[in-house]
Length: 305
Image 1 (tube, one colour):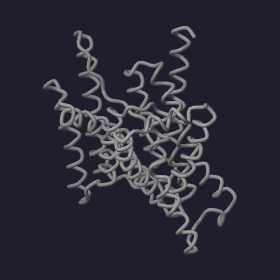
Image 2 (cartoon, rainbow, N blue to C red; image 1 turned 60 degrees about the vertical axis):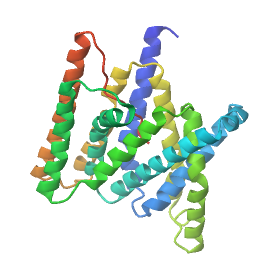
Image 3 (cartoon, rainbow, N blue to C red; image 1 turned 90 degrees about the vertical axis):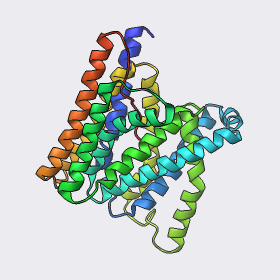
Image 4 (tube, rainbow, N blue to C red; image 1 turned 120 degrees about the vertical axis):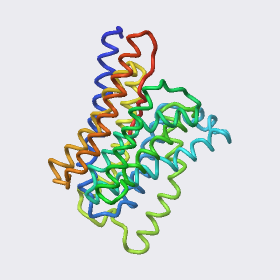
C-alpha cells in the first residue's frame, strides 16, 4: 500500500473509531432501564468471548498464553481494574443522564495525562505548558464553587483513563492481546456477578425485549471493533492527526447530551467547560509554535474504552 493510500486508510480507521465512541451515549441510553453493573458485566463477558475467538481464529492462542508471564499478568490486572472502573462510571453516567459531565472527563483527560507524564515518567514540560494545566484546573474549581458540587464523575473518568494509559504505556502486549488479557482478568468476576443476579431473579439478560438482549450481547462488539480500528489507525497516521481527531468523541457526546437528551447546562457550567476548552486550545497553540521552532512535543492521544 502506498504512503498516501496508507495514510488515507489510517485516517478512515481513526474517524470510524472516534465516531463509534462518540455514539456510545445513544447505544447505552437504550439500556438505561438495566443496572449499569449488569451492563458492564455483559460488556466484559461478551468482549472476552469475541476477542478470545479472534485470537483463536488467527491461530495465536499459544503465543497469547506464552506472553502471560507473572510480570505481564500483574500489569494487565492493574489495567483491567482501571478500565473496568472507567467503563462502569461511563455507562452509569449515560444511564443516569450525565452524558455532558462525562464528556468533560474526556476533555480533561489529555491534560491530566500530560501531568501524569511529569509525575510518573519524569517528563519535563516547557514553562508555558503549565498554563493550560492551571487553566483546566481553574475550570474544575469554578464548576465546584459555582455548582456547589465537585465534578467527581468527570474527574473519575479522566483519572482512571489517564492512569490506564500510563499503565498501558509500559505494557508489553499489542492491542489485541492486551485487551484480551484485560477482559480475561475481569471475565470470571463479571460472569459470577451475572449468574448471581440471575439466581436472585434480578438478571436482565433473556428477560427483556429481543432488542435489549441483542444490545447487551452486542456490548462486546461495540467495545472491540473501535479499539481494533484505533490500533489500525495508530500504525498508519501521525500522532498529531490522531490527537486532533480524538476530540471528535467528547464533542459528539457533549452535543448528544445537550441536543438529543436535553441535559441541564446552566451558565456556570458553560464557563467551567469554556476554561477547559481554552486550556486545550492553549496547549495546541503552544505545541504548534514549538514544532515550528524545531522542537517536538505532542498532546497525548488515547483510545477510549
